[in-house]
Structures are given as structure tokens and as C-alpha cells.
Amino acid sequence: MTINAIDRAKARTLVEEMNREMALCSVRMVDAPLTKYRETRKGIETRFLENVEMLCTSMSVDRAEEFRNMCNEECEMTTAELKRDSVAFYRRLGVLSELPPAPRPYHRQGLGELAVRTAVRATVWDLIFRLFRR
Image (cartoon, rainbow, N blue to C red; front, side, top):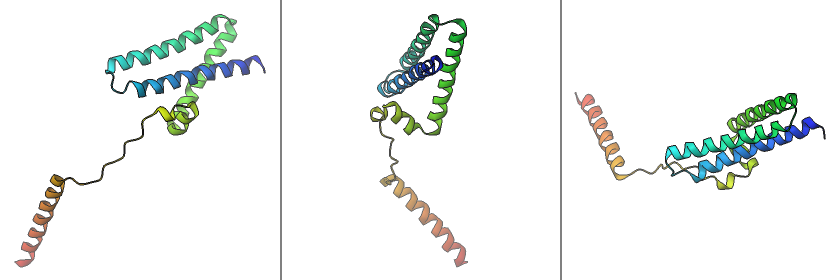
């Protein structure tokens, strides 16, 4: 394996781990205050950037710059993958079982809604009959 392939694999691992933590954060903090949620996500991003910079310190300047570019490319690719098919993305990361199921739409009519619809229909039909009686 070449150095570039090793660097690419490391960049992909770092980006996927950050995305996994972000997804789990979203699930676990669903009832948390928004400020706490944002702080936690910011902490995950900060740890990711610190890990990238820590790895870059042990590399030459050119290789470090190339590694940063690889991390940016991996972030763009995972974002595109998430937008294209989020279920497959979370399944690949192994967090799909942790995510809550999508809410099912509730199509059943309540009594109030039924009464309103019935009244509207009766009014419409009453107007139609009045028009044709004249």
C-alpha cells in the first residue's frame, strides 16, 4: 500500500468517525436544549480538526497539506452520499439501528374534523339545491 493510499484510508476513517458521532449525537440529544446540542456538535468538529492537525504535525509540509485536502474531499464525498441516500449512508456507518423510526402519517379523522367536513358538505349541497329550485 502506498503512502497516499494509507493517508486516504486514514482520512476516510476520521471523517466517517466524525459523521458517526454526529449522527449518534442527533439521536441521543433529541430532547436536549438547542445550545447544548450545538455545543456537543461543535466539540465533535473540534476533536476532528484536532486529530487531523495532530496527524499533520508528524508529516512533511507537502504531505500534511495533501492530507488536509484528502480530509476535505472525504467530507465532500460523505456529504454528497448523505444527500443522495441518507438511509444507505447511516446503514454503512452502522448507526441505522440507533436512529428513531420515521414518523408515520396519521390519516384517521377526529370527530371535530368529521363534523366540520359534514357541515361544509351539507352547506354546499344546500346551496346547490337552492340554485336549481329557482
